[in-house]
Each structure stands twice: as structure tokens, then as C-alpha cells.
Image (cartoon, rainbow, N blue to C red; front, side, top):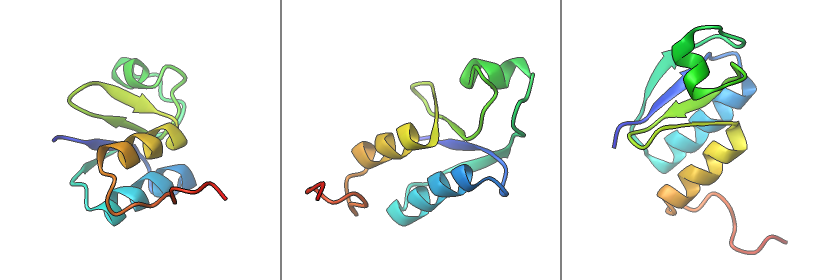
Length: 86
């Protein structure tokens, strides 16, 4: 599995995704991408130029909570979201 986390270290949202990747032991690389980029490669992954986004073999995902939900489904153990919503 090839996974690249795109963003920059001062972003709380990037750090949220990075924490999940580290806690779950999912291997990843990082690529520095600034917010509101106009680079076509960035906009192909994140149409609004927002960070974070991840690049996977299947394609790109943006929005930190969507990424976290994807990672939880991809690697259910260790579980970071309790099974009971209460």
C-alpha cells in the first residue's frame, strides 16, 4: 500500500490525520503542500486546494474526517473509534 499525506506541519487537520496514521502503524510518506495551492496536480486531488489530502493507489481523498474514516475502515485495529457511539 502506498499512501502519501499532503499538507504542512502547522495544520491541525494534517496533524489529526498524521496521528491516526502513526497510531495505526500505517506506513506513509509526506509531501509538503500549502493550502490554497493553484498547482494542477494538487487541484486534481483537492479541488478547493485544501489540505490535508492523501494520495492512495486507488486515488485521492480530501477532508480530514473523511480521511480518518477511510483509515479506520482500512485498518480497523487498533480501533480509534469506539463501537458504541455513546
